Image 1: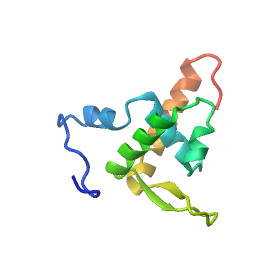
Image 2: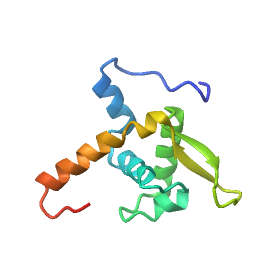
Image 3: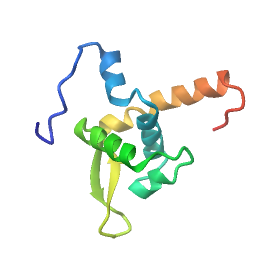
Image 4: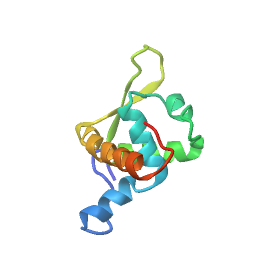
Length: 112
């Protein structure tokens, strides 16, 4: 498998394919953090949900394979790489926004 080619799909159903990519708790939270402007591995680890490092590594790798994020040089000029949403990744903004709105409406005690 090349870096530019995402892994093969199990099913042609678009809902199933989307869930294969971001249908777990952690991946959507990483995408949320990227949409909020977090870019570095340490930024994701600092989120209040407390994602374990091995899971974060796996989720970032999956997002890279599916071309939802790319790695870029850190804006601060350090030797560390940062992550940036691609156009495909930025297209998830209304999806994450709709989930947030649903949670605010239907789950008591939530806040944005």
